Length: 437
Image 1: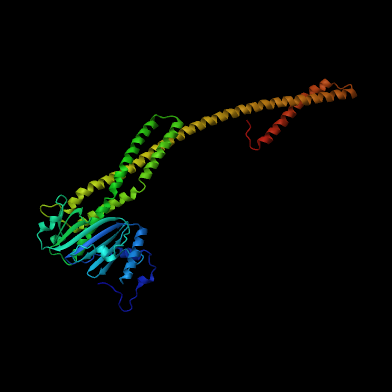
Image 2: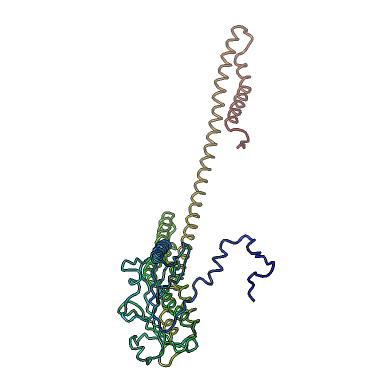
């Protein structure tokens, strides 16, 4: 039993709690796109236009202006789905991640008038390029099947029984003279809720199988680029094996970096496109599982036809996606190997340079020590000369002083003092903590 909180003294505790900002959106997602009820016979014209977040917002604003001008409920700034009643017809509008759909259902028109310009005028501005156009006819089982299927291409015609055998669906997946894919749904006794849900799922299959194939042109564009880069990488790898010179390795590393940049530029947008293709294909398979097809003698089912045509394309997309990822990994490994070789070569050169500097340092030290010894000798020579002159001067005053004896006696003290003085000066320039050679 559903609790509506109407009991005596009942208190809605949930309103007292702080609500998560995404709670309402998450709870409403399950009910965001309910099935639109249809009554046989009915015609549905379905369009899907590629759109971005900006163009979808602009389209929503234009739709709101049209609704307001006609006194109809208008979509809010965050509305992603709505159904508008337009007399005997209805418009179902939806915005998705990268496309926006307009679906019109109406009693079967007798004049073949397209409802889009009839409802919005010839100045209708779509949110982007047209990607899907489809016409679904929901009819009673009052005409022989062969007559119903006469307008389809037998080479690609797919026919299935769905809804427990209470309906038959048929299409050839080809655009007609008006550029729309025709889908036929023959109601042989469906329950009241089944026509709307069946029609919506079939339109989703048509939309998502088209969107899934958008990745295939990307593979065709990317395949020559991948082959070229693989060929050049093979050549560079061979040159890496043969090269030993640092300058050659640097040139090879520049070539590898250029290849990586080429691959990145070529695959900048494919990651999203390939992932979207896989997701759309999974939605197609899920919708095919839900409609629970049963084969009709003499015809292939929708599942068999779509798997036969879509699976090779999806495998090509998957192979290209895997190929570009593997190629990027190969480029990264080759570049890392080459950087390692360059680093090792640089370290070897740096080691040789340091050894050369050490040898020069030792030579300079020996030369310095030699010059230092010569300086001591030269300074001592001049000082002893001064002592000799001084001793000769004293001799004139005191004849008992022998100048040669005084000079000889001063040699060792003078040399020692000069050596100590030079040593002290050297230590002052070398600074504290210097390890003596």
